[in-house]
Each structure stands twice: as C-alpha cells, then as structure tokens.
Image 1 (cartoon, helix red, strand yellow):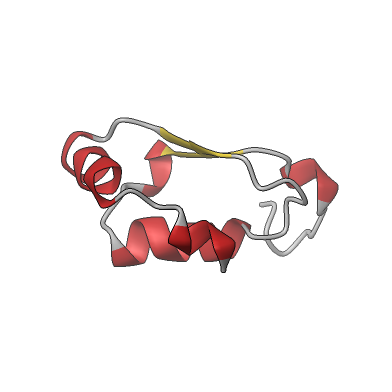
Image 2 (tube, one colour; image 1 turned 180 degrees about the vertical axis):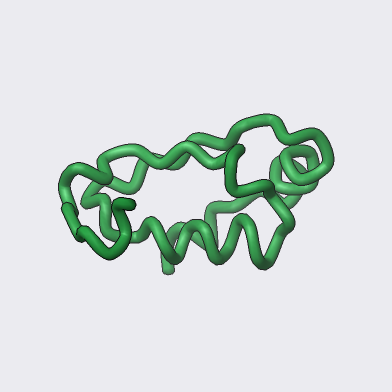
Length: 65
C-alpha cells in the first residue's frame, strides 16, 4: 500500500502521544479501513484524531455509520 510507505514514524509517535489530529487525503476514498488499521491499531493513534477526506466517493453503508 502506498499509504504505508509514506508514513513518518515521528509524526505517528507525536500523534499517538498527544492526540494531535492527522489528516489523510485518500483520493478515491476507498482506503479508510486500511488507514485506520495502520494508524490506530499499529501505531496507537486515537481514532478520534484521524481525519479522513473524500469518503463521500465510496459510499459504503457498512463503513459510514
């Protein structure tokens, strides 16, 4: 996944420690669950600190609750 290769671990550590929001701009809006898995589960970023753009481009009712 391209997203994973572009992550700066220092940014993730700061976000996990402080709760500072991280904005992600997935152009197609289809990687939301992958982004949350990487940021939250793997790096400890609080889910409420993740801002995902373009989700309207992939209107999956199972995800958009």
